[in-house]
Image (cartoon, one colour):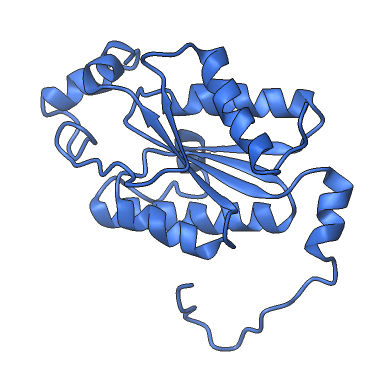
Length: 204
C-alpha cells in the first residue's frame, strides 16, 4: 500500500464481516482483471460476462478503461508514469468493490506486469483473478473500428501499446481466453466455469 501524504488520518474498520456480505449477496468477492492488447476483446467479454452474472442474480460491475479516463483518471495521459498511476488508482477502486462483497471486472490494457502485480498484492489470496485476453496483433488490428492502430503506425498516436510501446503479458494468469479462436459465448462460459470451480459463485 502506498504511503499517504497526510499523516493525520486513521484507518476506519467496518463492523460488517466478510462472511455477512457473502451470505447477503450469495457470492464471494473477486476482481477479474482483464488484460490484453487494444482490440483483443477485453471490454466485449467483460460486458457479456457481467450480464451473464446479473441474469443469475449475482452483483457484478465493470470498470472500463475508456470510461474511467472520462472521470476518475481524466487527468492522466499514456506516458509510462501515467499508465502506472492509472492502474494504481483502479486497483484501489477494485479493492473497495471487493470489500463491499461484489465481483468487479477491470477491462484495461494494463501493459506493465509490475503494475498488475501491485494490484494483486492489494487483494487477499485468491481474490485477484488475472485474465489474459489473448489475440494476435493482426487480429486486434482487424477489429480496430476506431482506426487507432492505423494512426499509431502513422505516428499520430505516440506510446501506443503493441506498436510503439511494450505489452508485457502475464507469466501465470489464472485464466487465458483466446478470443481469436473461440466465440463470445464460449469465452464467457470459460470465465463462468472458473468462477464456479473456485467457489466464487454458486454452480448454475
